[in-house]
Image 1: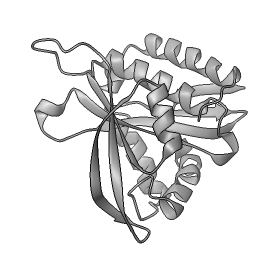
Image 2 (image 1 turned 90 degrees about the horizontal axis):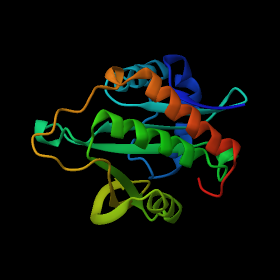
Image 3 (image 1 turned 90 degrees about the vertical axis):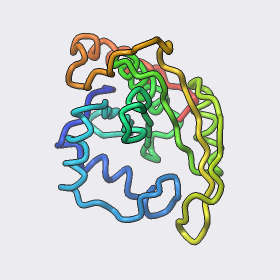
Image 4 (image 1 turned 135 degrees about the horizontal axis):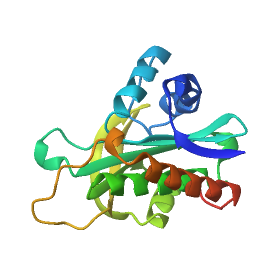
Length: 201
């Protein structure tokens, strides 16, 4: 059975198991120290106050996760948000990332965000292709902006417009303020994308 669902504090260890190899072996994340499970659990709970953090569970196993996070601190940036997605090696190319992002994007639209940014450490052809398939458009590269694993790294930025740019837009809803029935319908629909398979991340 496949479920796209909201993450809970109890998922922290399983999610961290997916994330740790990315920290230790790649520059796809610029995080360099593996967080303790308790700290990571607090991170999940904190994020869920404001933004979706979703997991894909297949037959009781967490296969991947995706979440939204603050873009910048200043109030004028509040309609913009960043996204991340990570998938366990055993579940690559089964539609997990597509299902997670489909649900994440639809929820962020309900919240009233306007811009969704994907920040991709380069080179990463697979992530670039995936995000462009999801509708993201490239607009900038920060050259040599980070240093990890003995190399200076470039970071590319991709953008997806979520909602129209209106005058005097209301502040985005907090995640806990979004209609729960609408969220559940989104999650159910996205879950079917994994069951149907796919050739994406």
